[in-house]
Length: 131
Image (cartoon, rainbow, N blue to C red; front, side, top):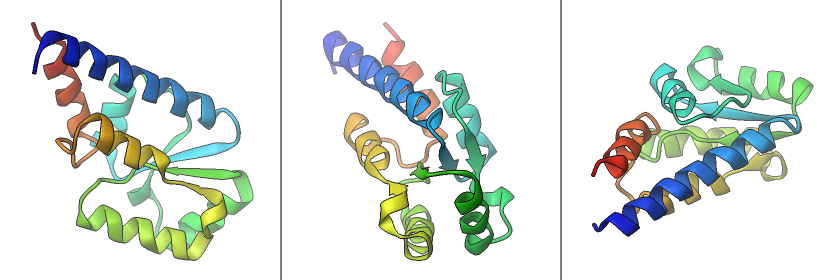
């Protein structure tokens, strides 16, 4: 990968973080799986309203707390099988109109499928900044 491609990817990740920050100020919740995912987003500058999936007792607890406090759920669960299963459970319980999954797809597109776990985004970003 040449230097210009790396610069473009860095810009796309920066734009991605800026957009989720903007959305999370509009009564949206960003949902990640665990602490390292949270830390990776924070490292990249995400200062939005982020919650850890594993801090909720179960998907029903998440949905109940979400409905009383937020209008939109930005799902950034990992792009692996377990993340897909959790995402489906939440979508089935909450309904598609409250959920924004475009950021998961966009993250996969930006990283060209090289990042499967949100926590890997930090090292991917750093590797793009090298040289």
